[in-house]
Length: 94
Image (cartoon, rainbow, N blue to C red; front, side, top):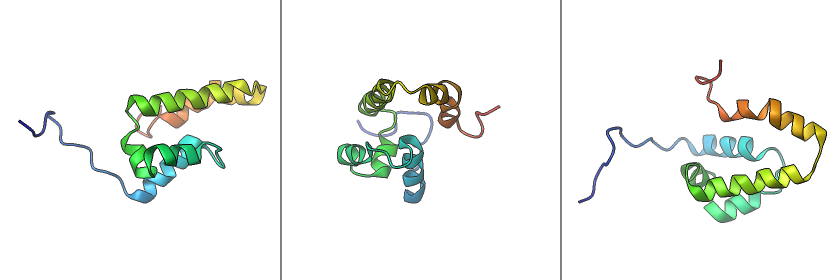
C-alpha cells in the first residue's frame, strides 16, 4: 500500500531561487565545497530536499571538520558565537 504516511501534508518545494539562496548561505560565499555539493546532489533544490538526510549531515560534518583544521581564532569565535543564528528561522529567533 502506498500513500501518505504522515498526518501532515508534504512540505512543498520552495522556489528554485530560494534554494540557491539557501545553499549559498549554508556553504558561505566562494565556498570551495560548492562543486562537491552540486556533484553529490545535482543542484540546489535537490540539496535542499536532502537536507534532513544522513548523507547531507555527513557532508556537513566533513565541512565542519575542514573548518576546524584551519585553527583560526576568528573562525572559531564566529562558529561559537554566531553560526547558530544561521541555523534558525526568523520564527525561531528570540
